[in-house]
Amino acid sequence: MSEVTLYLADEAAMIGFGGRLAQITQGVGVIFLEGDLGAGKTTLSRGLIRGLGHVGAVKSPTFTLVEPYENASFRAYHFDLYRLVDPEELEYLGIRDYFEGDALCLVEWPGRGKGFLPKPDLTITISPHGGGRSLHLAPRGSRGESWCTALALEFK
Image (cartoon, rainbow, N blue to C red; front, side, top):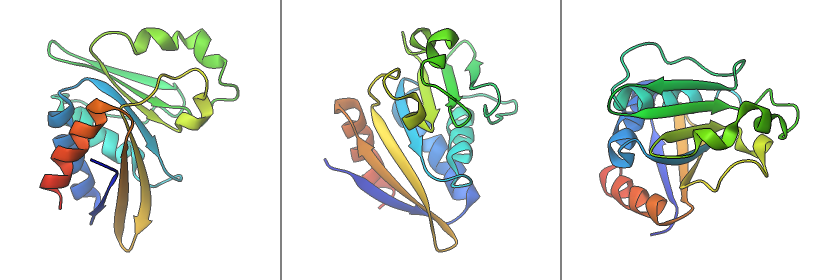
């Protein structure tokens, strides 16, 4: 399986895609989210975190760098590294601890944490396309490959 490109027509479709991605990942793994400001990275994250079973608000971690979401059945961490000045700041945050164990880690602006982040299972690049969004899914390992295979069959 190689890379997959999908088109989503609107915000509702992005949230629905995030919910399906939550089911496929089973709440475990590392996903990098790339795209310009306003591309839909946080919207996708919101759909994914709600798809895992979170019922409260899902806010952007732009100012906190990380928002944790946990309950009895899952642990998810949503990172937004846009305001990160130096990747070394992630060491002070205890970044390695978040990626241990069975958790799902969503990382917006991963390039700003280069050298301090683990290899992702999947990189999703979001860009405007007509009135909707184009999502380019690039697997970075066997886990990401299986996710892409399942999503390509469903969203073709």
